[in-house]
Amino acid sequence: MPEGLSDHEPRLQELERLAHRMDKAFHLPIINVRVGWDSILGLVPGVGDALALAPASYILFSGYRMGASAPTLARMAANVGIDAVIGSVPLVGDLFDVGWKANLRNVALLRRHLEKKGNGGGALGQTARPPRIRPHQRTGAGRPERGGQGQTPLG
Image (cartoon, rainbow, N blue to C red):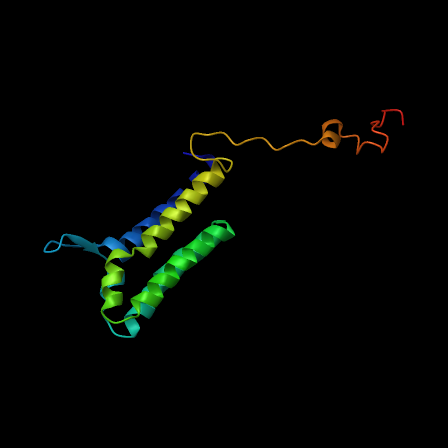
């Protein structure tokens, strides 16, 4: 496990359990589909979709507190927004909620981001490329003078 991820692993597992309850808690054997509390709450007119936003917002806020990047947080917010907007349309939104698992998507995005971050920004199993060193950074003596001559140790 990447070193940066081990600090967040218990929290990520908690968020994964919450996302599973919200998106895949129950199996509907007749149509062989898994639904969660998000889909069930969405059936309650008006209040249901608002209640389902609370856990989604908690996952988003947890990502912020765990140090997710702005692009990752933006994707997570877009997933919640799509779920909220389309989910608020009667009947169509209820069917959409069954397929659009915003909470599971967001926890997966967060885990992927933290794995990359914990591994130096590269994909798992790859080493990060070292930073580029410019000529004036090699000696630590300052920038070269205009004539192309570097500074000498004696001045």
